[in-house]
Image 1 (spheres, rainbow, N blue to C red):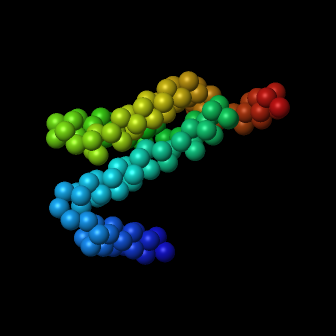
Image 2: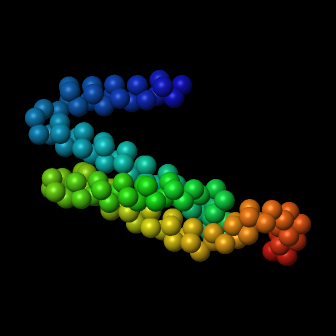
Length: 133
């Protein structure tokens, strides 16, 4: 089903760009479609950010994903800046901001996870959970 969706979406983009637009407009339409998909990549982890803030626990937010998404956003931003292409540079500004937000949250709440994982004390974890209720 996922493969069908990806192939169908790719085919739809090709057909729309090929038959509905000509010349420079075609490049702009494809650029806007890519911009939307790039924004989706950076916005997708926000549901985890909400969970981290709510639970004050970074167990479900991998730090390496946040770091490399941020580095990727910086690299693509400078590439877009050098090409003077807004469709490349613009979504990566947002990606950088979201990446920094995720890393700041990780720094704020990482201690709670590391205590439980390193010492492996389920009794302490249960008692702390009971105190929070």
